[in-house]
Image 1: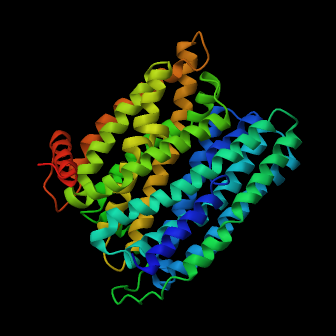
Image 2 (image 1 turned 60 degrees about the vertical axis):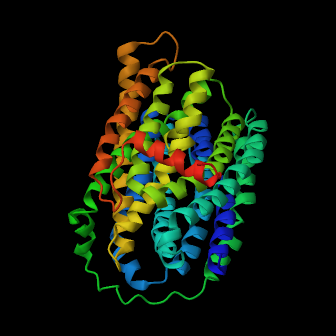
Image 3 (image 1 turned 45 degrees about the horizontal axis):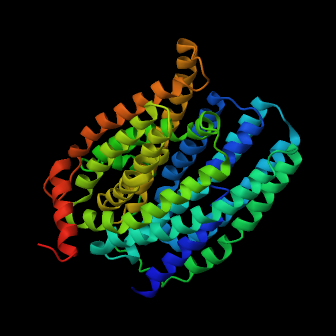
Length: 439
């Protein structure tokens, strides 16, 4: 492992701590619920704050691509990203009106999330620059492990501290939240220093002068367009699951922030053990084959929320926690990232990755808005005897839709032969058995 990859690992270790609270909707949802925001406002805030920054990122991508200063960009924008959420505290000091706060939160988070979008696009270029193509799956698995460990483990003591101070006044709650914001965000300082210490990037001769209208090129690209369609669909369904899962768990299962943070950490630790294996499978059998089986697994996991009880909750946690984690969620995230990098044109990676981010954000925006309105409609139509019972029907719909979206995966280009989920499972088992020294 060369020194640049080591610096990337340490960067993600510190960055994971820095954004563990300010970038975690578990804590942001606690603010929303504290001030009485409803599900439509939840969907509006999360949808707008996800999609608009990605739209800005796409428009800025040609200029950023020509700069070829990706590591400098990453260090600066993430410092801004961890500083701006402190404006949330200013908003709560000005007004307690739910509608006004919803608009203020949406504006603050939209501005905040512009910076990680820019940073993420630049990071994909850094990955492509510093990680050999034949090691991309393996190294991204290790990097994700470092980031996940630091991020999720940092959340546990923070959530316990906040739970202990959330029963008092609003002032006590906000003061406690600000303390954990400060203690975690300071870690971005060593993270930015590390990314700036990467060896100098070679100026790519493949980078062409980009015109603003060329931001539409990824949408016309024959190989990349099917990926954009798939990303939009997966993001919309992921938003329908993730945007409303915290209120459901708080109210239906009476879980606290600390309980959910423990689940997050447990899922992450399990995912850590699986990520290297998923990375090896991606490198050996192709991203498309692994993505297909992971999307089907996500669908089965979300279907577990169609019933109430610890057994079904455990199934959701294991297979598709939050719609994007669990056994299959980690694999789906890795494969989408690798496909966006691999299918982008040389010299235009920033633009292609930004386009992938844009459609992902657009899907999230649509999914969050549709999800909030659908939940309200189900509540009126069903008039459930117990609050949140209509969520079961809602999540069955989401799970079935994910299974259908799994059918879009074969349309993606891939140099590896297409394999069915059964064929991939058999091949994976043989591969693992071979590594264990059995024949």
